[in-house]
Each structure stands twice: as structure tokens, then as C-alpha cells.
Amino acid sequence: MKNIVVLVSGGGTNLQRIIDCIESGEITNAQISLVVADRECFGLERAAKHGIKTQLIPRGTLFSSKLSQILPENTDLIVLAGFLSILNKEFCESFKGKIINIHPALLPKFGGKGMWGHHVHDAVLEAGEKESGATVHYVTSGIDEGEIILQKSFPITENETAETLAQKIHQVEFEIFPKAINLVLNNY
Ligand code: GRF
Figure 1: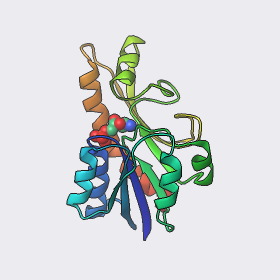
Figure 2 (figure 1 turned 120 degrees about the vertical axis):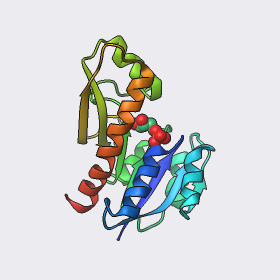
Figure 3 (figure 1 turned 90 degrees about the horizontal axis):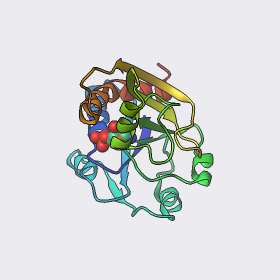
Figure 4 (figure 1 turned 30 degrees about the vertical axis):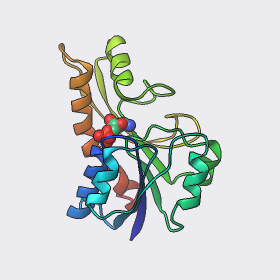
């Protein structure tokens, strides 16, 4: 059984999807051993409701070192599911190949500092892009720069807004995130 630690900052619908996929067997051979948040958020409540251990480490410069202190020793994968803090270089390097993130755009475009939430969707619409989507990638110390694991796109329609984009992207995320986790942990 592989052990996953999930990091969240917000509503946690991707966390919920991962929990549901583990419970339904869509994600195999895995369990969530801990959910860590960098602020009070609904993601913590979702985890608690499923009997998953939670921990709050306030965001700030000490986050990464505090996280490495409490991380269970047997952690196989760290999953960033709507997590807004930046993990420091030392942390990213010591868990190289073991941290993945989901990003609400088609990387390498529309990534990097400040590119989160509606900022991403606004930038995509302003650039007149013909498509958007979601990307699951490895986390390295360069923000949103790690190797891409899975990506899925869809066409942008004429009346698209940041809100409609966000909704469509969430659906894509629910599809590719569990697949990426199976790929990384179980090789399929
Ligand atoms: C997702 O769109 C994800 O791509 C981004 O933050 C959002 C998190 O949503 N990193 P939720 O908290 O999982 O609902």
C-alpha cells in the first residue's frame, strides 16, 4: 500500500475526488496518510469527514521545514491539490520525483509566479487562446516548471468567462488527476 500526503489551501474538490477514487478503487494500492493545509480551509474538513489525519502549518517561510518534520517517514507521494504556498528548493530537491501538482492551464504556457486561480483564466482569455485545460506535473523548485505527467485540453467557446473556464477545468482535473496518481504510483 502506497502512502499519499495531500497539501491543500482551498475548497478541496480535487482532494475530494482523490478520496472518492481511493474509496471506489479507481486509484489502486494507495491511501491518504495525512492532509496538510497552509491555512484554514474547507479541504481540512473534507479530510476529517473521511477520518483522515489533518495538520495545519501556517503559510510562511518556515512551511517547508515544518512540513518535512511532520511528514510520515513512509510517504511515497506528495500531492499538491489546490495548494498555494511555494515549497522551498531544499524540500523540492529532497523529495525529487515524489511531488506532483495540478495546474489549471496547459503548461508550459500560463504558469509561474502569480498564475493561480482566476489569474490564470483571465490571462488565457486575454491572450485569445483557442484552448485551455489542465496539467499534472512533477514539482521542482522552478514554479510550474517540472516534467509534465498528464495534460488534457478542450476548446474555448465564444462566450467563455473565467468562471466557465474554471468549471470546465475542474471537470478535466477530476479526470486526469486520479489517472496521473495511478501512473506515478502504479505505472499504469
Ligand atoms: C484547481 O483548479 C487546481 O488546478 C489549482 O487550484 C484549484 C483547486 O481547486 N491548483 P480545489 O481546491 O481542488 O477545488
